[in-house]
Amino acid sequence: MGEILVGTCSWTDPALVRSGWYPAGRRGAEGRLRHYAERFRVVEADASYYALPREHVSRSWVERTPVGFTFDVKAFSLLTGHPTRAAVMPDGWPADARDDGLLDEVWARFTEGVGPLREAGRLGSVLFQFPPWLRPGARAERILAQTARRTTGWPVAVEFRHPSWWRTGQAESTRALLAHHGMTAVAVDMVQGLPSSLPPVTVITTSGLSVVRFHGRSTSWGHGSKEDRFRHEYDDGELAEWLPRLRGLARRAERVHVLFNNCCADAAVRAAERLDGLLRQQVSGCPPPHRSPQSPHPR
Image (tube, rainbow, N blue to C red; front, side):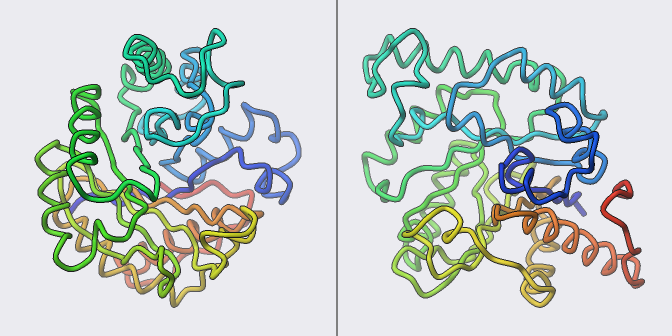
């Protein structure tokens, strides 16, 4: 049985910081990460999507977390075909840097930025979350092949945003394509019934890792503000739906990363704590121990 690690898709989200989950004295950059790492063993670093990661920042993350703590890092927006602000591009480069030489440099800087995590054995995966306009087809296959060449030797996870990737008739081809490139398929939990809804498909494409991201079940998905799209409080019944799926993934993969992205106030950390408790209860047959917000997460 593989190991299931539960965490959230950020530890620096402003709404989480404002929620009061971080105690007094631990609200600075170092204190927040140390506090989080005492309660969870995995986190997704999403800042690298908005700006290229910095080597010295990644090194500080290693220094501030215990051995065994794992970072999943979100790929820079330019590398997944998303719009990128010119203000975050280095050296005044254009935000639509499609020139091969500029792209080479962007890839090199991203590689350098996550280097300390790779060297320390702390890089769980690099998440390539492709935009909703990327659909199955020859162009998408070329993009995945190019990404695979650029990331040789990396642990890579792929989340598609267009639902056609996992619909009946296409799902097996998608699974085979990701497996061919050695990329982990990301499963998602989200509201169902919308045109943009992805089904909660759980497939294994690499034996080392499976990734599940919980986006919440807001009916405002796809429109409205960020708070509207991700505002959702998971209840125990919704979390329990995933217990057999997560156990099934763990039987086929060495590690399963479960990450909550319902990033409004402290909703994500509370859902992660409850799911972790339900998983432990399922193993032990005993109710999960009560933990105050200040008590360390049991190992």
